[in-house]
Image (tube, rainbow, N blue to C red; front, side, top):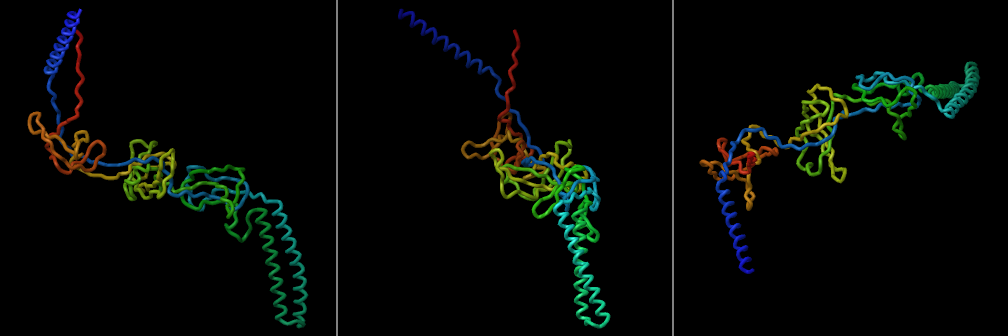
Amino acid sequence: MKKTVTVVILLVIAITFVGALYYLYQKNQENPVVYATETPSRQTIIKKTVATGSIVPREEVLIKPNISGIIDEIYIEAGQRIKAGDLIAKIRVIPNVSTLQSAKDAVTTAKINLDNEKKMFDRQKALFDKGVISLNDFDNVQVSYQRVQQTYRSAQQNFEIVRTGTTSGLGSAANTLIRSTIDGMVLDVPVKTGNQVIESNNFNDGTTIATLADVNKMIFEGKVDESEVGKIREDLPLEISIGAIENKTFNAVLDYIAPKGISENGAIQFDIEGTLNKSDTTFIRAGLSANASIILERVDNALAIKEALVQFDPKTQKPFVEVESGDQEFTRKEIELGVSDGIYVQVLNGISENDKIKIWNQIKPAQQFTAN
């Protein structure tokens, strides 16, 4: 029994030894690794970060009425270009019954006072004509009469304003005709004929009748993450791409970075704004979504290599490449790197344009198996 066990163990050892020898033999038969090389090239390298947002007018003007009432007519529609002073809408005033009655009572009271003052004036004038009273006394009576006349006219105007919304002599101070205050495009008309509107005053913003804007002055409004906000600064160039306008980018300049971030979905976001180039005449609709590439650094005609060719010393972490010095022989050269766009990196010194750099991490081609 012991002899049989010994024979089996020796047989296993022999098979293992033979298998190891066969494996080593097969490894020696494999072709040696042949490293390919690449040469540096001249590239335009742009380091940038991307912000998402939309295109909006720099300033939007909300047209609000200075009197409450009901929309009687609307003379504009969204998308229409208008000029300052153009008619937008007409309001029909629906007076408050209590206010109207108070104004009417004020007119009646003023008329009673006027009639009484007129009688006194006529009486004093007759006495003055006969030389009974002095000129000074007559002047006082005349001034009092004129004051009451003015009070009556004011009461009539106030009653007319309450009843119709306007009166003669006030110009556009109280008017049922709403006009544009700027040259621009109508972006939105949120009311319709028959809608009730409220005047704009100290206690109420009032009802917006139309939203106007100069669409020739558009800006990009977007957000950047807190991890990127430290890399950007005002006056950096932007490249704006709009999803609705294919194969075209718009130039802009970053002119605002919010001093305070806002928490959104667990991340801190900072608002930014960039003014689009005025020389571009392409019509851009307000509210279109867009992406802005913020150009942090840019170098033209830079000596560059692919980032995949760069190796780093495990101890010093200094970058280096392996340059071909002979047939499949390579020499290590330390290099100084500049701007990178994630694919190409600028090489400031360490190699020349004619050097052949080893592709040290090349992918081996898949082995081809043939069927017997």
